[in-house]
Figure 1 (spheres, helix red, strand yellow):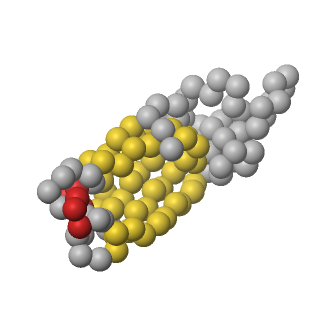
Figure 2 (tube, rainbow, N blue to C red):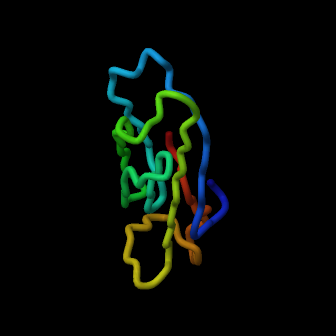
Length: 110
């Protein structure tokens, strides 16, 4: 979500696993999520990632259902300028004084 700061965000989708994937590992790739991401597959906590500028991959194979819909939820926490967090903000701040970049929260690279 660019241009809008959101302290907490939820993303959700449902998907089916193709039948020819049953003997393969299924990986979910994120380009960048700002700043903390918790990924859930079918109600299971699949991973936690901290860092708004780095890609990460989640092996979701063990949480998938091969017969029916699967639910993907991603919870994002962006504590920009929030105490007690000390995170690298670069040009992103909620209170710009001389640089006017808009904040960026959530899944921003995929």
